[in-house]
Length: 267
Ligand code: IPD
Ligand code: CA
Image: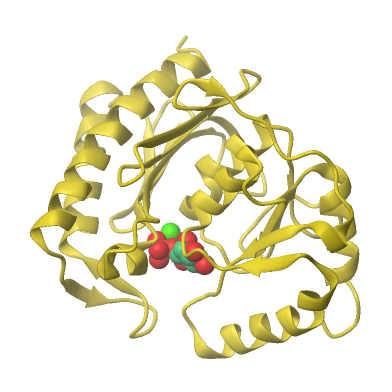
């Protein structure tokens, strides 16, 4: 049987190799290859090339495992494990040369659905910052090999809160309205453009909390485990599992306070 830390070792090797590739491609120049759910939701050649590389390295090392990737879809395996992959999280940052983008790779057990899966290993690599965030279940979380921890409890009024927006205009309008209700009740809001790195920011105490509606499984599979292993509560609404519907990640008392504000009518 392969242990979570062995899976993490392989995931990390693949993510670091892919991080080098996308940083190289970024330096060469990036162009939009196509748009997806809306004109704003773009894919670059580098996203596709990176996912092809990740997929082939996983298939070579672990042919029996399943795969779920942002750009190339799902393929069931026979081992009960699935690799959940976002080749470039923060694609719009990547397109603009903003250095907040990452390769995100997780290995999950069970059906590859966030409500029920058990994440075993997760790695998020930001090649532009030379940062490798990693965690295996029960093994704690690290940044470049050193243990990381969420920020200590704070009053919500002192919390720096990250969030994000979806790509569809109607969803964004709803998300912006929620921020109108929240912004006066927290220290400030950040929209950094990569859900995976937002979750890692919670794990290192760079953000007190992060929440978003409408994430895809590959946006939060690795970062969610990293935040949880660093001491965050990572969940959906009212104690449900994190899902495409909603995810909040923070030190547990901050998560509870944030959730109660988000539960107020109109939010
Ligand atoms: C997006 C980023 C963004 C978040 C969006 C995601 P992509 O992923 O993580 O921060 O707000 O919900 O779709 O498109 O850059 O891979
Ligand atoms: Ca993403």
